[in-house]
Image 1 (spheres, rainbow, N blue to C red):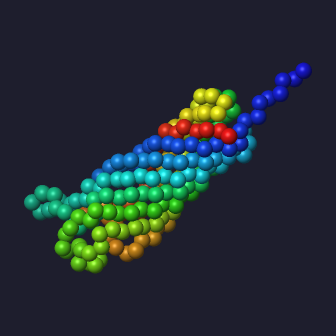
Image 2: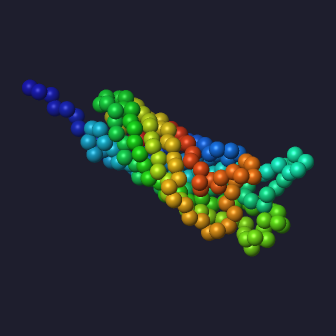
Length: 199
């Protein structure tokens, strides 16, 4: 009698901890993700996720005497993102599943803790906070390792590139030098370690 192959669960949920790496002096303080996915077949998975990350922004440029000068910008930033990804398993394996994929991300950034500087504050009505919106496209590579029938652990690297950005017209730059790009125009790399539960 032919043994019946055990059917895998279609749905899974998970949580993850990671890091987001921007160019320049942007330091990731915390990074948490929540995941919900569905296996369409043995190869293709669709996954939705939300991520919260907080950052310290070392805003500065060098003065004529080589000293650090406050630029009237923001010392902290919170980033909220929602992503929809499609992932393709490179080969079938019961326990070890490397994959590649792509995603579209909505990114909401909230800049906080304004550094006081009279010159810059005069341009934007002394605003202490600012929010921006962006849409990014990303490429993904990762691996899932099955621990038990229901639980698996995963590791993932993601490279995210800006496609569209919209802000409220105020100062958004996080300077490494005077001509640095705003974060909304900068690509970034992130990694995530996750634990997933199939149901």
